[in-house]
Structure formats: C-alpha cells, structure tokens
Length: 203
Ligand code: HEC
Image 1 (cartoon, rainbow, N blue to C red):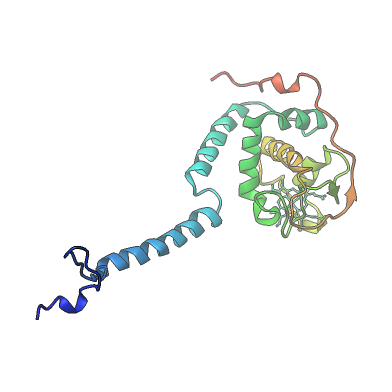
Image 2: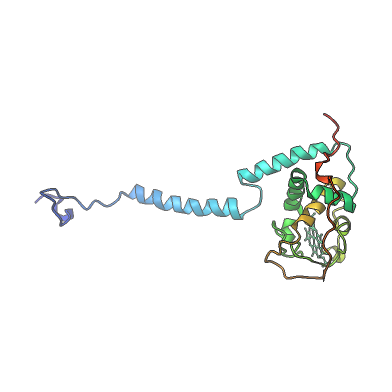
C-alpha cells in the first residue's frame, strides 16, 4: 500500500484525487508571528507614546521649522494675539506640538481631560476670558496641580499653546465632566487677522 494512501481525501473527480496535506510548520509559525507582530505594532505606534508614527514625526518637523520663524518676534499674551493665531493653522501646529509634549499627559492629546480638566467644553475653573489662558499656563493653578510653565517654556510657546487650547473649546469631547463655570464665547477675531504674516528675521 502506498504510504500516502492514508492521507488521500475521499473525493475523486474523474480520477483526480488529492492528498490532505497539512500546511507546513514554518508556514503556521509565520502566520502566528505576523498576528503577534500586528498587535505589537498597533500598541507601540498607535496607542503608545505620541510622536512615533511617520505622520507625527512629519508634524513635529514642520512645527520645529515654523518655530524658527519666531526670530525676534515677541508675542504678547493678550486677547488680540490669541485670536489672531487661533486662525493660523501652521502656528496652531506649533501649539499642538507644545501641547502634546507637555500637556497631554494630564489633559489628554485631544484635550478631553484626565488628571487635568477637560479643555474641550465651555466650562472653566480659572478662565473667565481668553487672555486668562496664558496667565494660567504661565503661573499654574490649584497649588501646582496645574504646573507653572513660565520657567519651562519659551514665552512665544506659551502664547501658541494657549491659542491652541482656545481652539479646543466647544468640541465637548467625552472625557472629564464639566468643572467650573460656563463662560461666554471667545470674542470674534479682528477683521483681517488671519492674513497677517508673523514678522520674520528674513533669514
Ligand atoms: C501635571 C498635570 C498637568 C499638566 C502637565 C498640565 N496641566 Fe493644565 N491643568 C491641570 C489641572 C489639575 C488643572 C485644574 C486646576 C484647577 O483645579 O484649578 C489644569 C488646568 C488648566 C487650565 C485651566 C482650565 C480651567 O478650567 O480653568 C488650562 C488652560 C490648562 N490647564 C492648560 C495646560 C497647558 C497648556 C499645559 C501644557 C503646557 C498643561 N495645562 C499641563 C493639570 C495639568
């Protein structure tokens, strides 16, 4: 008797029969390994530390490049400046990078809150008007539960991240529940604000 006969499948198509060949061991291992790899990859790049995907790396590089345009620009942490930069996507990319690097661990990358309050709703504890944001960011709040960033961040970065925080408002993302008081909407930006380019050193 042919040694293969025991693994010959029952069916017979006009004399054509087939063996019940198991998939080879190496193939099974490769299959299992690719599933394990997919999980590791997903957790590492998509759930892990922000900034490891190509897309985020690109965003960081773009923002670093934009930041060079600060030059000798000195941004005032006032309402007019915040409203102006809120409307400029390339500067808000800088604000977002500062936020992800320094603030996301407490406020979440999307601002929905964790240890820190939810920044996407219309309720604030330490903010009554938009210019209060850079003040809180600079000096901190709640005895350091919200750290003071004045000593750690470039003053222009404080303005950019504050304008970015102001743009997070109104999305009402699910996260930490409302805290503090409902405050009036931000004033609208002065006309033509978005067209002005920041002063550069020209080089
Ligand atoms: C160590 C955790 C932590 C980090 C990091 C942190 N925050 Fe906070 N933040 C808090 C807490 C807690 C509060 C609420 C303070 C309070 O209860 O009055 C807060 C409040 C705020 C508020 C005021 C919100 C309100 O409702 O009054 C703003 C704005 C803010 N943070 C922005 C930032 C920005 C921008 C950064 C990064 C530069 C940052 N935070 C980093 C914990 C943090």
